[in-house]
Amino acid sequence: MTGHILEARDLVKRFGDLDAVKGVSFTIERGESFGFLGPNGAGKTSTMRMISAVSQPTSGSLRILGLDPRTHGPEIRGRLGVVPQEDTLELELSVRMNLEMFGRYFDIPRTVVRERAAELLDFAQLAERANDKVDNLSGGMKRRLTIARALINRPELLILDEPTTGLDPQARHLLWERLYRLKREGVTQVITTHYMDEAEQLCDRLVVMDHGTIVAEGPPRELIARLSTREVVELRFGTDSHEDLHERLSPYADRVEVLPDRILLYVNDGDDALRALHEAGVVPTSALVRRSSLEDVFLRLTGRTLVD
Amino acid sequence: MASALDSTLGWPRWRRSWWYHATFYAQTWRGSAASTVLFPIFFLASLGVGVGHLVSAHTGLVQGQTYLHFIAPSLLATTTMQMAEGESLWPVLASVKWIRSYHAAAATPLEPEDIYAGKVTWVVTRAFATGVVYTIVIGAFGALESWWSLTLPFIGALIACAFCAPLVAFAARSQSDGPFSVIYRFAFVPMFLFSATFFPVSAYPGYLRPLVQLVPLYHGVALARAAAFGQGAFGALAGHLAFLVAMAVAGVAWGRHTMRRRLVD
Image 1 (tube, one colour):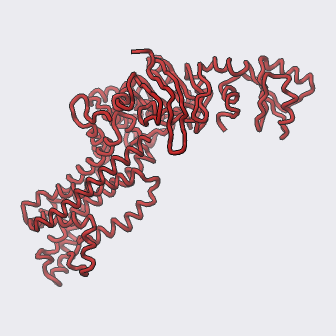
Image 2 (cartoon, one colour):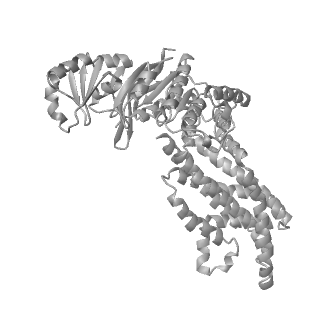
Image 3 (tube, helix red, strand yellow):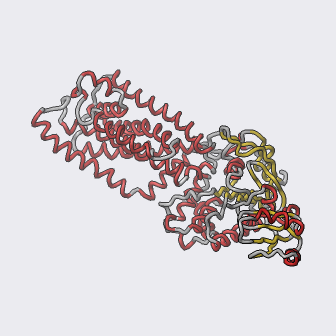
């Protein structure tokens, strides 16, 4: 077996007239955490459904765990774990029953399912709520239960579609911590997100998607280094005429991005740039120096912000 | 398509979906199980015995039977139909759209056809069990006259299948539950009332009688009545049976197709 756990070449997904995915190629290695970063409608979910061996590509080739999903769908899905965007839990049933019943879909013997459910309840930090109805859980707990449920068959590849969308910061961090632990245990993960901080935190390598295509690929730090400057100065002027400032500011930066509410200066050293601006008599109402992030990479590649 | 058989036992994969529904029911059965036993008792006591008194006082026998005997088999037929309706519309739309539990199942080794088959076979199982309870209750009221009555649970299961198979398909392609209440009001309720359920077909004017033949529940009621009384012409019974079987077969074909489109595309 090769190191690739998943290989996609020229994947296309078409719904009627809509090309949701327009020929994407990527490979995912065993043990890595691989990300799909992009705004809503970029084709992330359609790609996820194809690599989950649920929906068939319109064209292109796809091998998951070395198998062809057209002919080995059930076998492949038996070795994957999928965490969908919505929790899809049975709200009327207990936390434990949700795990045990899902295990039956994989034909896992009942005694084994019981043992695993107990382990996963600990993993998801839900052991104390095991007999509560799912309806009564918080959003973060439901999310952890959905992840635990996806692990009931000990998957080799875990696919998470927007795992923390809608969660509060504390719940997100708890969830990230659980995902690190899984990674240490050797579970390969595929994660989609439109949060750049999540992608930077969780992914060893990622692709940036926009309008159904991949516009960049690499480790997060490398993408930032390659496609952005070291630092960014965010300026606000409290006027509507940001466009006029573009020309005036360009000598002070590698690149200037004018957004509706602020101007971004891409520079190597933010403090130096600010000082130079000050000496030239440019006085913003507020100025902030920060490190470049994937958000900046995305802006550079697409001309748009990720979340708006 | 990959083999629909488990590599281990050679059992069909849909049994896992059936099992899921059965386990779900086992977790939440108490209310519905009590009404399964109590409802036919109340129904037969009030309509069969109570109204039956009035009927026998005024018109005597109905098709050679007391009114209780006449309506007891239709009770079994209508109940299994209603159970299929209740199980097939809202719960299925919830599973494909609101809770999306069928989408979760589609990410496991199950194929959409397995998910569909598990649902239908579960409803048929429940209808059969309900049929057994109803047959016992009807028997306790003394309204069974033939050993053919032993087929009543099977007739109930067939009626449930004939309704459930297309209704699950319909629900699986729905985007909202708006049409469901319309179907209830303008199809299910009239069907319940006018399928020769509470009065014989002879009560209709001649020009309406052929129309009743087109109503699915009418065929279920006719079969159940024939089984309870142990009488009926072979040709007519074969026709009733064929109608329901055809409905089930067409429904299954539609349902397999619809479920795949909804869950996989």
